[in-house]
Structures are given as C-alpha cells and as structure tokens.
Image (tube, rainbow, N blue to C red; front, side, top):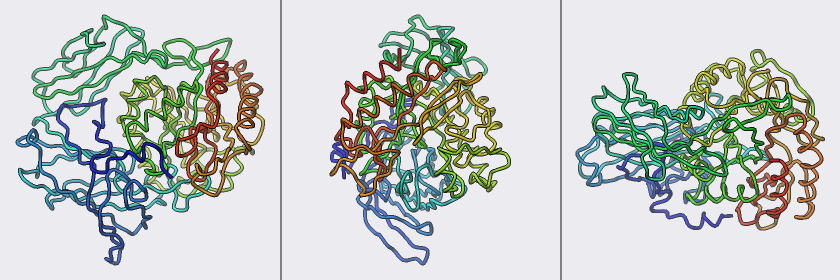
Length: 572
C-alpha cells in the first residue's frame, strides 16, 4: 500500500527541503538518498548487504530494504561524499534529525559521536572533514523492548494500537558550513500583551557584535542588539496576532559576530480564562474551543517518516478542510518542517512526550477506559512500567530535550506529559519541572487516566461507554480521546484485522454516529466547561481502522459538509 505522495519519492534526493526552518542558515548540503547498508548479526553473519534510501527506516518499503531486525543486529550505514565548493575551508557540522536507537558515527574511520535515543536530533562537529572524498559510517542497534529508551507506538509484535518498529536513520541527514564560533540556539518568547518579542541567543564564544532584526511581509518592524545576557526585547511597530484563521508570522534574522541564522515567530498567547465559573482554553486572552483529531504521523510506505514534504501539508490541510483547528501529535516528535507547516497554515498542536518503560500491563490497558483504576504514581512505578531508574532518568532527560527542540514552534499550545499511564511516574514533580522549562504553554499532565491532580487539564479518554464528565475544579475540562469508529474500506486497508472502538458498515452510518456522538454527548458538555475535544483519529494506521482518512490517504470517509457543521457548532 502507498499514498499518492509515496509514489513520488525521489530516491536520490528524498525530503531535500531545508529541515529546520526555525533555525536556518544559508549553507546546506543534504545527504539524504542512497547509502550502503549492511545488517550484521551478533555471530558476525550478514543478513543484508546492499543499498538503503535514507532517511527511511529499514522496516519500510520506501527504504528499499523492508526488513525487521533483531535487538542483537547491527545496522552499518556507509556514505561517501565530497564537500561542495561552499563548504570547503569552513568548519562543517553534520546533522542527524532522528536515529533510532543507539548510534555511533565515524568520519574517515575516526569515531566522532555516540548517540542514544530515537526521537531527538544530534549534531556532530566534523573536524576530520577534508577536501576530496569523505566517508561517513553510522553503526546502529535498536531494541524496541528496551526499558530505558523511548519507543512510542513501536512494538516488537505489532497489533491493535501498537505498530511496526522504526530502526536506524529515519530523519534527514545534512551538512552545513559555519564560522569558527556559532549561534547554538535561539529562545524566542512572544510577548502578546506587550506587543513585543524577547529573543535570547546561546552563542559559542563571546559576542563582539550582534544585530537582531524582525520583519513582517518584508517590512522591518523592529531591530536591536543583544544585551550582556545575550537577550533583547523588541517592540513591534506592526501587530498581527497569530490565530488558526490568520496564521501571520514574523521573520527573524540574528547575526552574532560572523554567524547568521534565520527564524520566525507568531505573536500569540496560550492561557486559560474563566467563563461562567469554568476554566477554559484561551488563545490571545479569548476563549477558544479546541476541536481536533489524534494524529500519529504514520505512513504505509515510510512509517514514522513522511514520504514527502507535501504529504505533511496534505494531512494538515485535510483536517483544516473538515473544520478542525487542532492536532494532537500522539507519541511522536515530527520532523521540524511539520511544525513549520502547522505554524504557517494555522493549526494548533497538542504535543505528546514519547513514552517508554517496561511492557505495559495488558489488563490495565484493556479495562482502564471502563474501570476507574487509581494509582499513586510515586509508588506504583512497576505497575506502570517504570521500575527501572535508568529509564526514568532517560525520560526526564528527553523531556528537557523535547522542550528545547520544539520551544520556538508557534503552533504548540499544550504539552502532554503522560498518556494513559504508559511509563508514568512522579507526574506532579515532573509537571512542576516542565512548567519551569516552559511557562508559555499549558500542560496536560496525565492524559486519559491515573490523574494525580497536577497540570492545567482534567483530561479524559472515553471509549465504549457514554461520555459523562463532571466539571473540573480550577482546571480545564478536556476530552482528549474519544470516538474511534471503524469504517473498513477494502483495497485501502493494510491489515486483514480491524481494531477500533466500534464498527460501522458505510459512510452514512459513520456520519450518523459521529453527528449523534458530538451533538448528544460532546457539545452539551460545553455547559460544564468542556474546552478540548480530540477525535480518534486522522487516518487508519496498520491494523487500526478508525481514521477519518484511509491509511493511504486516498479516501476521506466522511463528507466535508458533515464534519464542518459539527465543528462550527463546537466553536460557537
């Protein structure tokens, strides 16, 4: 099975667009394309020796490998390249957007980097790069069952809501030439009430000269220099608030010494306000009902990696066309271009942190939607898959890295710390820490169940039974998963198995069920303060057939006018 975009993959130069629009330099050289690959077993034997299309995981059709690997296997990637004219004589940085799970990088046979994780990027200083031919080797191992590393929805034995693993390089790889001292990161904080923006710069060395410029539609609206703390607050001469209907963005240019980077921001504010005695979500100090879908970001031919840049745009626009103003990015960190497209197209994002830990309790997963289990997550770590201290430490480290990675994305309004108890632990303490890391966004501490009273949301998942929610005291009442009706469409479904939370026979029945569910159960809850509704889900995924779109994105299962009418009623 393939999407239309999957058939358009350029194997020699896939996903060639600049990977990080939020932090862009003029120097860029993509290494996506054909690499050499060996799959080595622990006994030294070779089970595969050929080519792979980077950045697609070995398990995918798009990689041209499509093989499952064992935890004891080693993936060995090799790529030879010649530095382009513009990069010779400069300091060269090598970027990996995502490699799952443990990776060692060699340049010209010299070990230059060790990485552990799977969802966050890393950058390597290529001091060993030279004129003429260079050789990169990346050795990767991946144990999907590891109790330490994040895995999201990946499973050794995919079924129901768990999917095919992602191993090896699955994000873009590229080079850029930079000066000897570089801008390492930006911290962009929109100050909506003050009609200003604060920009902080982390610089590798001592800034001798600096200039920060902000433009809107090509017109300069503010400029200044960094203070002794490497920050500047700029008042905007043109004020254009960011909203889903008017996703206006300001361009930023930051120059420090001889390094220059480009970025952007949206002037917006996420908060909660009181309406009729209930706390509700607010955008720019005004109440806004968030109506959206669960978005897991899987593609049939390419897994966690979008097949093309347009494929990301198509998913976002498909949901906007149905009247949704929010996507809950579920248990995955997307390529940075996905967030860029949400920023410029006007789609608010609820961003989940990626879960990990030991195998989860099947009984709890099956019956938690029906039986109100209660746990103290400082004491029930074994039940929730977090007995391993190293795994807890790694999650906390990844939480910090995720915030650092995504903090400058205007579209992200809410962090989801834990989902349905998967690997949950010490959520009260971690919610406080997350608030210290980022005070500009709201926090859904425990989405679904095992609420510990922390965070900004009373967050519920309801399947199988009638939706009955009580008003939240001092928090925002939210329905962060519901629905999940399955309409199986033959020749557009990958698996013979159908997992869902209720089945329908045809489009008319699906539309009737959705209309009744929203109008009889969801919309009336607005009187109790309901402010967020997340329908399951954007598209089918492998054996899960409860999407609004088929897995190949070729069929929308509901008519646009039906979903638009529901969403307009929700937003009133």
